[in-house]
Length: 280
View 1: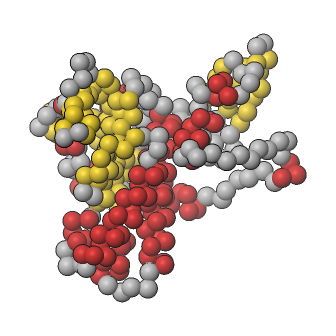
View 2: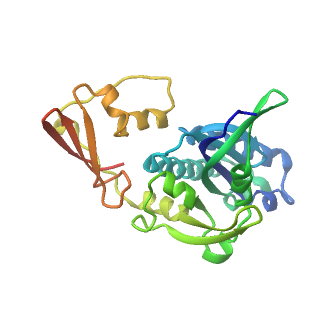
């Protein structure tokens, strides 16, 4: 085990409805579908690092005392969007009328995200995270969110995570909820309705700048995951490392989360360039 604990963001993505989905469906098709969806989730969850697969769940983490709340929330919501798109694509592409393929819409996705102290130990040559916080994030998978709120697809952020990520849950419209656990007693969590996120994405028009109005554009190729590239390009903490001349960026967002209507003040010595984000 590590000599001293470290702090990290812990996230579990769980395919909900899978147990009942398996009942009475063709096992070979069901396993193929789950494998496909699991790959989709793992690839979309960057910048979090995959720890292991736990049946129909993906356990990932991000070490650090602090978390960029905007990037973390974007990662959870974009993973859900990728999951829903993949569900839609599988169903539309399939000509099979077996129960496993017909019942694909029964599947959904939920997340539990926590922040706390962890330890590491080697088990059979594999790194394992251990400690009460690891147990807690797993306990929170069994909860009363659906019964108490009617929300089936959600991202659950614990109060500890909200504080570590500097998220303003009230300003962002997250729903407060209480859960009782056997390892931490009663705790406060905050819920994002991911079905609402999906529906907003389907309904909203995309904004773009036509080529004739673009002052400058770049095209380059990289082997890095798109989510990681996006983080490097958009994070105020990382941009000065690659954008020559920028000393710092002051970011102003109506609800504290980076996105449309966010205004960046990019400081170049005594000068500032003001940017407004139109789409995200």
